[in-house]
Length: 109
Image (cartoon, rainbow, N blue to C red):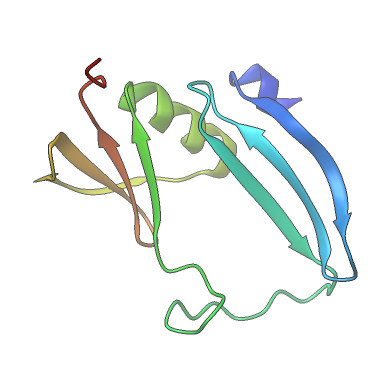
């Protein structure tokens, strides 16, 4: 499976979500969980991030941004966008389609 070959793991196997579709939950190599959902219709709806229920922002906080980028690029073909400083994190790298990844310092005890 491509997921395990890239260091990810299955958290919850694919399951029906009533009559809405199917979903499964996975984790990337650093343990960040993400879900994949496929609607029951063969035709996906048009994406409009201004509409209720459509994804408008994705964000990943990672201690090893390079490993995270490699994983998501291999799994989904994502590419980097602009980089800039933000928050208390060292740098923000933007995914295509309004998403971001932040490298943050370790949590203090």
